[in-house]
Image 1 (cartoon, rainbow, N blue to C red):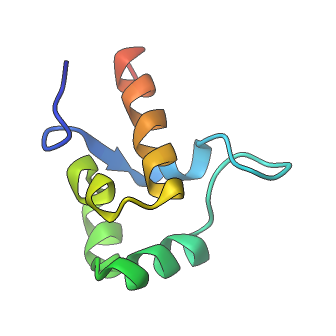
Image 2 (cartoon, rainbow, N blue to C red):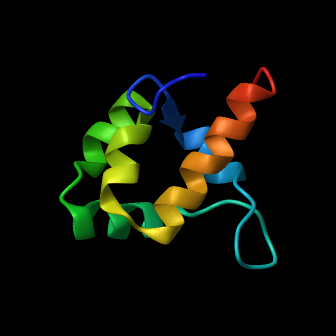
Image 3 (tube, rainbow, N blue to C red):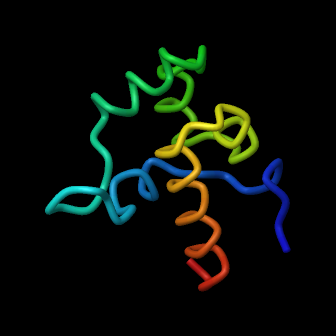
Length: 79
């Protein structure tokens, strides 16, 4: 099993995660807000194409944890 330090949560994961609304994915506006709330560098996340899962898990935020779980499932499915 891949560790949270090794798991890279991509922007593609963010855009395709089953959401809480009628459409899948989280928008960049929400991503920027989450990053600002927890002191994460949104510009670096965009530049790098994602972020280590461990940084999202450390926030304890429900949306961040949902995104990490989705990324784990995707990686486990060979994606």
